[in-house]
Image (cartoon, rainbow, N blue to C red):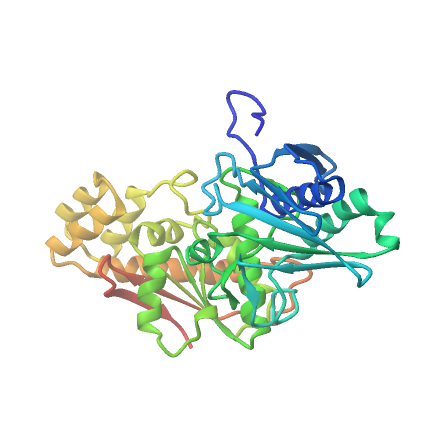
Length: 373
């Protein structure tokens, strides 16, 4: 794939774009009975791009072509996956698209897809249909075409995604709204948060649990075993965005779980909590310790600490666990203040959305918990 320039990260292409290219190549091979080496498609953003065809096998009855997904410099779990399309003619007129091996099946509502259908999202489906019409528009006046999208390693890849929790079983989703994967895309992560919240609400959940990552999610699930899997949503660095999205839904409670590094940033009023975007404020943490009646020695050590975890360790060495409650309480107050702001004119949640904060240590023990009924 192309580099925009040598100083930028490389963009890649979505599974939807790959499936479209494989479909167009397979149908062309079926129609012409010739091997297809590469194929050009038009992305939803209007850009024409060319894909190399990895496999191309055909008979008079059907053709199979594949594309190897290149996610560019994005850490996408589907990078390197083979996306295949099998095309065949049928007497039943029209275009018939389904999923095969490695493409998930939708088993729960709330995803904008019919329960029981293949997890091929609307935009990729339209891209595939448009590609079919380009190749075989006239042919479709006489007969129909069947297209099966498959991903040979899709079931294994899906275990590394949110698909099982969202009720997508047996494989990955064929995704993409622009056709392009932007490296380390904040928009992609935000879209996954919004989708997970929509899904939870569509399945009747009124309490969601926002976690900063896999470890804090595991701790939260152990602490709250009676809650269904879909309420646990990993929000990474995007606490502010997640809270805004929560305000758009008729939720009764939001629980935020994490560890001391992220909590220290929230306590200081930062809601973009990745290390790239905000640093731990050790002067602030020292002032919290002082307000909680920590010794002068501990306050001085906190000011020169290396990490928030180091602050926690110093507090434990001095027998001063009060710092954890102070951090948690301040994080709670900041979250509550954030939620009280006028987030959006479209927000439909009346009044204040109750929030709870749970601070874990690195072994999953609760260091502090803040919540007001």
